Image (cartoon, rainbow, N blue to C red; front, side):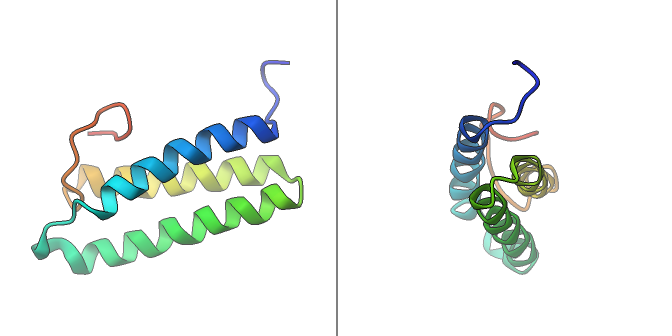
Length: 92
């Protein structure tokens, strides 16, 4: 079924978001560190939540948490808090 969220779906999108997050954390200009700290903390919390829900087999909330995490990353990219260039991983 195409519209079903599965464990494989979670793992695929978690991997993509984690990759984007790892790149973003390494791309913070000194002048933006304070702003980045809040975004980084929120992304970490949502990624943690995603794992929590996945372990409970609550794939809908796990998937939602991944999307919130990635939304925070994209927000940082759009505000130039993260100096990133990969338009496949970031909304820039």
